[in-house]
Structure formats: C-alpha cells, structure tokens
Amino acid sequence: MNPTNNRLYWMYQKKKHLIDALILHHAPKFVYQLKASLIEGEIPVFTFHLALPDWFDEQCKYLVENDYNTLTAEEFDNLIRNSDAQFKNCVFLTFDDGLKHVWTIAYPLLKKYGLHATCYLIPGCIPENDTQIRPNLDDVWQGNASISDVMGIRKNESALCSWEEIKIMHESGVIDFQSHTMTHGLVPVSDEIIDFINPHFDPYFYGNIHVPLYREKEKEVTSREPLLGMPLYRSKPRMQAETRYFDDEHLRNYCISEVKKCGGKLFFNNKNWKSVLVELVRNYKINNIISDQYEDIHDRDQALLEEFCESKRIIEEKLPGKEVTQLCFPWYEAGDFAIEMSKKAGYKINLFGRRKGHLTNRPGSNPFEIVRVEDVFLERLPGNGRKSILQTLVKLYNLRTLPSQLFPEGRNKIL
Image (tube, rainbow, N blue to C red):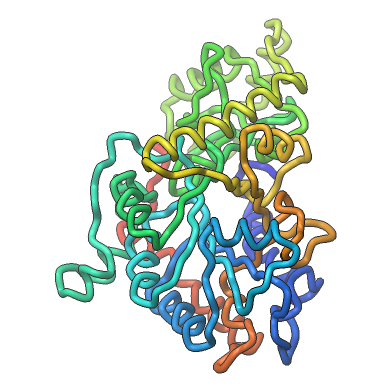
C-alpha cells in the first residue's frame, strides 16, 4: 500500500470486495448465489463504515422482517468459542472507525428496530477535548434537526464520535465498543521515496490516516500532520509491516523548509516541482550522512503490544465497566506477529475482511481469523425481499453522489 493519491489503487481498494465476493466467490455463499439457501451453522459478519439514513433503515427493516438476530460482542464471542452452540438466523453487525454516523444515524435506527451492533474505535484519533453531543435522527424525527445536519461532516467538525456520544451509546447497550488499534497507522517500510506531500494530497477526512506515522526527536507524531514537501516513503499498514523504516528527520525537515522558503503552496505551481524535490533529496544525500534505520523485530512486537494495550486501556477507562476483548485490524490486514501480540494484550477475537482459506464463520472457528463481508451484501441474506445482484450494484452506483452529502461545505485542503 502506498499513501499517495493513486486513483487506480484507491478505486481498486473500494471495489475489491465486489471482485472478491461476486467474481472470485471469496465470500459466504449467500452473497453470490442466485437462489440462497438458509444460512445454517454459520454467522455472517458485516462491515459498515457509514450508515446512510434510508439505506440503513431498509437494512434494519430487512433483518427484522426476516427474523434475524443481531448479536452483541459477548454473544458472538460465546457462539464462536462453542463448537456445539445451537442458534438460528444470527448475524453480527460491525462498524469500523467510529464515524459520527454511528451516533447520528445508526444508533437511533438500531434502537428503533431493537437491534445491536459493535463499533471498533481508534482512541488515538478521537479528540480528547471534544465533549459535544450532536443532533441525531431522534432530533430529526422530533423536528429539531435536518437530515443534512446529521449526515454532513462540516469543516472543523470531528468526523468521529465524541467520547460523550460513545458513552451514551455504551450505556444504552445498543452498541458495544471495541478496539481498532490506537492510530489506524501506515508506516514506511523502505527508503524509497514515492511522492511528497503536496496540495493535491488527500490525507483522509479524519486522523490523516493516509499520512504514514513518523517521528520527531524520536517521539511518535500520531497526529501525522501533512506538511508540504514531506517525503512519502513506500508504506504498508502498521499491522502488516514486517519491519518499519525510520526516515532521517533532518532530510524530512530540510525538504519541508525548502518548500516553505519557495513560497509553500506556490512552489507547487511549477509543473516540475517533483523533479526539483527529487534533485534536492539527491544532493542532500551526497553532502550529508543519512541517519535512518529499520526497526528490529523485538522493537516491532513491543510497539504493537504497547499500542494494543493502550487502546484497550483507554476504551475501558472511558467506559466504566467495559471489557475490551475484540481487535479489528485496519485495512483488514495483519501479519501473524500482530495476531500474536493481540493475544498477549488480552484480546480474544481478531476481525479482518477476507482471509485466505476462510470464507465464513462457524462455531468452533478460529476466533483470531474472523472474516467479514461489506454491508452492501446484507440484503443478499436469504429472506423475503432479497435483493438481486443487479439491484445491489444499482444501489452502489447511486452512491456516486455520496461525497457531496458527506461534505456539503467541501473537503478540507492542505494549506
């Protein structure tokens, strides 16, 4: 994975689940079968990020009308660990990241239909001083807010739920909260510079998660501020990186400083700006001793263990009485070393997207190899009103206007 605005790459990432599920059949059978049989002996796990008002309402209604039971995190844990468990029509709904829509849209609708879900939080990305409680669909139904109020993410507004909102949902018992690691981090894995932070770089709409983690004076900069001119090295998700590359801070700051001297954003009006920066890096390396290094395996494992423990600690501290037992890996990816560290940190369940050799989840399955499918396939479950593959693809096509709904004031730019 490269943290650049490679459109082809991100288009593939967004459509990968469709290719895997519908063409390669790397999914439970109900996803791609024209006539779905009953889901006997398996527990479908669905991945949500956003909850769209009409769409999520329709999904909830489908589950209720077809007598599906939505498991709590504890119930799912118990079923997976008991190979002799007896159950019927059980599904597990999961939300990654903890976007505001969990509070503004999903929570009121889950309450309305008497359903449950589990949300995986990124504690290191949730603003500590954010104590707001925003309007949600309950307020819309009472005439005190509009759909655009609860749907849109406005400039200078946190895209993630606040701890106050999370606490209310936790206490209701409707939504459980578990870990999605501390920072949802990418890390450099090579000294190969593939790009530089520039005005067209998309750091992502929360947490700057497209910016790889870096250090300043040997301290982790978890805010990942995208500074113009900063070199971007070939990177991978932290949980998949066999070894992390620590760049030369002086070279990084030199590039940033030179861009600032040349007018900052104006520097990038030069169509050859990348060539200029590449040459600047080359000359710097000729005239200076580069102070970089690779992380050793022991330090990697220790860092992961500390991150897993810290994420668990913060969630349990913020939500009294809560026990965090599940870890959902960002970008659905993790190496065996990350799984082992999660066990040491006290987690009992690991969740991914697709895993080689695992198409579905059954009682007695390896709890550290839980697979999930995208929420778009929820209405492909057996039942009255089941959506066809064509109807599913049409719904996806209609999402092309989603960015304008999410960002009514436009997305933030790098200045």
